[in-house]
Image 1: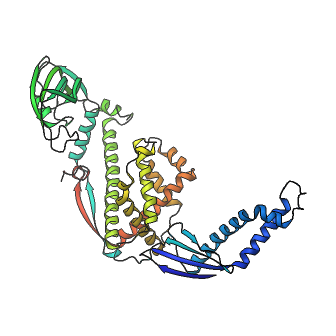
Image 2: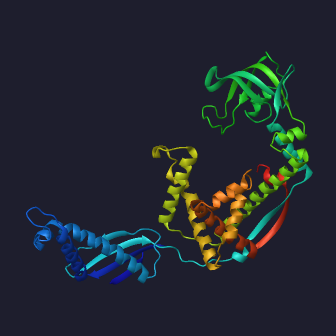
Image 3: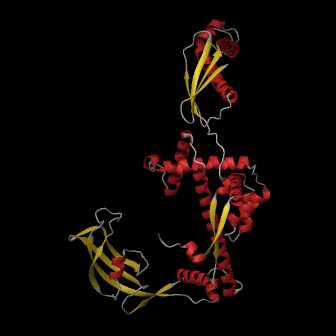
Length: 431
């Protein structure tokens, strides 16, 4: 086998393979003899069909099958011989036979060869989240709102009240699509509607009718309304005040805390906040590591892998959106940048894992499963169910080994602690 390899791009290779024709012809003859022993042709007894008739009837198909096998095996042998790592299937072009040799050219991309650089120089800001009494109080207030009730009041509406209204919106005297609503519930100041609209509801009482202008922002999703002013006529049916439950043992019982009352509930709230903060810290740190890893090791990626990843992301998007018809799928090009980043990160992380000989074990897998199941009431049952499901564990193992790579970079890079309150960390101000 004669093999010649040419580079026709950063990762694209053209490989010509030439083989002697004689062994191929021998394979064809051998397979035709095998076919002849079992072939059923009218006018001949099984096993007694003349070789000429067998070749005439089955020769083309047998030769096609043999050449297909030869192509597959010789391509595999050639890339092994040349120490190439194809990133995907090749495009094959065969040459006209000359009676002496069989030759083909395979065009394909190879996996990039690279050495990781500057891992020890990666700098990470690691949040150290503090949960103070103010954070606990804020969380309890949020939970109170979840269990709030509404009571009709005979007074003018104000911030925080819920008003039940009918409204009609007009643009240049004409009602626009979506500009009407009946028995619509709006909490003033909650941001359900545009700020001008909610402001206009203040000071209304049951039975009041009021007309005011609302200016739509320039980037409003409905183009026909963007940047324009509309007239809204409002009819108020009732004004309701929010009634918050008291913070006591009965309140704790609303969240299935049967023993320990409010004290136990507050401890549970803190524990959940710690778990939530820890998860976000790890997500934040991981994103920093990934970004720094890419910046320190720019990488040319095989377009074959990128296109595969684009299709995978498109399928994931369709599942999230509940779409089954491919015609309604988001455009494939929308996933180009994300796919490129995913592929590059995957290659870099695999190299970290290989270079540093990182492994995982049963204890690590169990710890990850326990983290995933920590929020469930029947967490022990969920853990056992996950651990006993090979398909689930096949998905979890790559997550664990990837975390090993991230942890190695953190342990060997430059990590700077950054103290921050729970509220500021979980709800950063809009930039």
